[in-house]
Image (tube, rainbow, N blue to C red; front, side, top):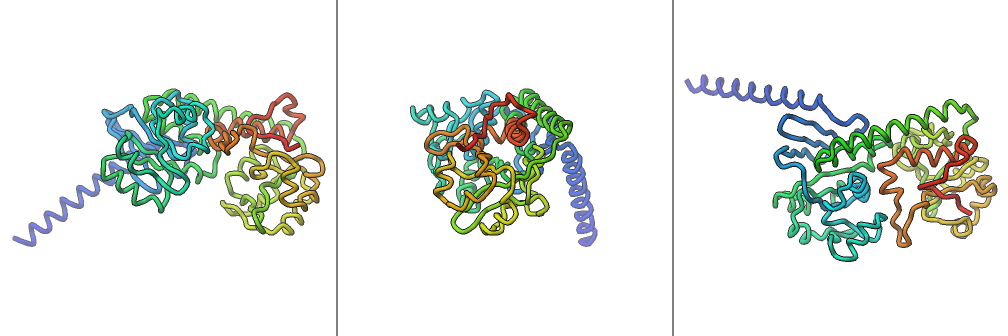
Length: 354
């Protein structure tokens, strides 16, 4: 008899697990995100599920839309802003490095909280305010704080868009924000516009059919030149903008640690140099490393940076709105690479170093 009960329990448990697995499989076939690889969003009749590498989060539709959020990544500020949701933000991290002027003003007048710095999260402020969701990035250093928040019933949404290799994958995170805050249709329409614009620029470049300019990027930090890997997000942008990125045949998704000599050997005659750190003009760039003058791109004045929209203390809209609008970033790069194709384009995120 005892063995019979054990067998019956095993059969019931197995059936239950099978049904659960079938349910999860059917739900996960309905991933609402097409381009993003590091996060997935599913929907049933009564719930929204968001799965990332760090967590599996669920929201009952009866609890939506959410009414408040505290935010760590600045890109999420742009997602909220473009969906007219800035009033839902009750706290942000590192206010000095935020570009959005409305958020900066609200920090100054005290209507929203500063909830952390680069190295520290002010856990007490978060626990007292208890937002509907805490939007952050994965960080082993903050795992203890995340656990404390979860224990208090605060939902934690990990939005690691910086890990996405496809520019459209980064922008698609706006659909998650829209779904949670009652702006799903607006987010869908915005993202569709971004995708359409992005592909239109790619088609125009292809039809232009001009020889691709050679491209290199970044600059020295100490004794190392950190060059974007050939499978990185930046390399993807250069390719989509029609550039011949000189390290495109490298398979790395992260930066390469190179010497000045190895970069000069390959890029000395390159046409265009982009993304040169925080430098705002050629004079300060050259002062940091005099041998930069050896590059043809420097000599010909073809040095560009993502500093077109910055505030004095370092907030840069390239890392806020630029994440959501890769179509605008692509248009800037395309105009830099092919000035005859877009002769009337005014650079938005980028700036030519004079």
